[in-house]
Image (cartoon, rainbow, N blue to C red; front, side):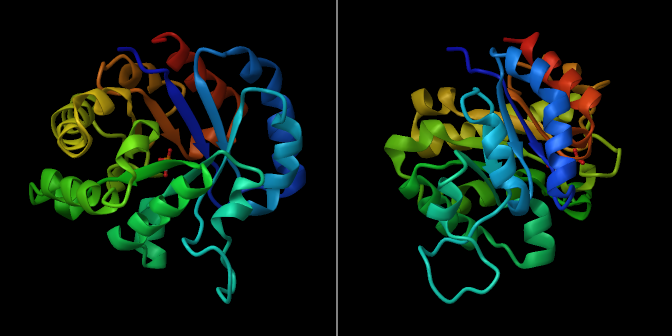
Length: 255
Ligand code: PGA
């Protein structure tokens, strides 16, 4: 079965509304045309409304970078799942920066995932080992735990909608992208078998698994050519029109 290639831009804490509008306006003509790739933009919350107005009526998806799991209430500074769902169809969950700086755990990821499915958001779930874990040969153990615990509350009948991003922490924003063979080995040899074990082989075959970490226009094709890798979660390069479009084009070549 063939999975539709998937490329998401994680803008992180970058761009004012005006800058966000400008970037999307510049990318729109070409981005709307590459319809063989599922394209998703994940701006900061403050720009979501403005970008939603620009992508409504196109096939370009919109995602948030985080959300709370509760429906509403006294959670100062947080955004609820149904608030995200008003504008977005995707949400990034468990990004390593959330885990590292904001105390995100496999348990909170699990609760957020359950909440995302409840409101009809497609979660893009990030997993990946730190440099220390990698050097200690613990990649398989760490990624397996993140999946088994993080995905523990996913409704089985909806698991085929999941998008998983393998992002080795040491490769994010460092310019030190993971070796293609290593990324492919973790995705094909660890992540896919765990997904198959949790949800069944047929469901696993539908789940898109992305690579993320220093993907650029110049190296994207190498990753996307790997049969185990269905696309990318792009940070820094998603803030640059030419780089992001080159990455989406590289994904289209594998469609
Ligand atoms: P990067 O970030 O492409 O800037 O390495 C990837 C990510 O954090 O999703």
